[in-house]
Length: 153
Image (cartoon, rainbow, N blue to C red; front, side, top):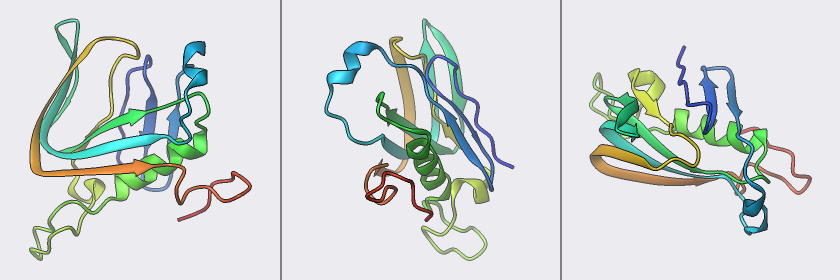
């Protein structure tokens, strides 16, 4: 089982192999006018990462993935499910048993995922890139069909 706890001010995520769930924050009304059509995540493979708020580290990980997420009022739970599923299953790590690169995901390696922060707070995000490897995910591309219902992948 793989789980990640997130600050209640930003977002919450509980991820296991069989179930993904995000609890999204309520966003301010002034964000509603933005023309954002998808939840976007920038994923970086890291040797370590941390988030500091008001001079205090609120979250940190060793090897794993740092995920920076843009959310909007129009985002749904299916957008969050899609991003969570994709992040947890991205094969960005070498299989140490076979030596095959780009073969294992963060759960197989038992690595951390840092997706944290305090919504609206000034944060200092520190990271040591491993690669560097940076990927971008948008929830609107393959996750939605014409009815707006999430498709299984």
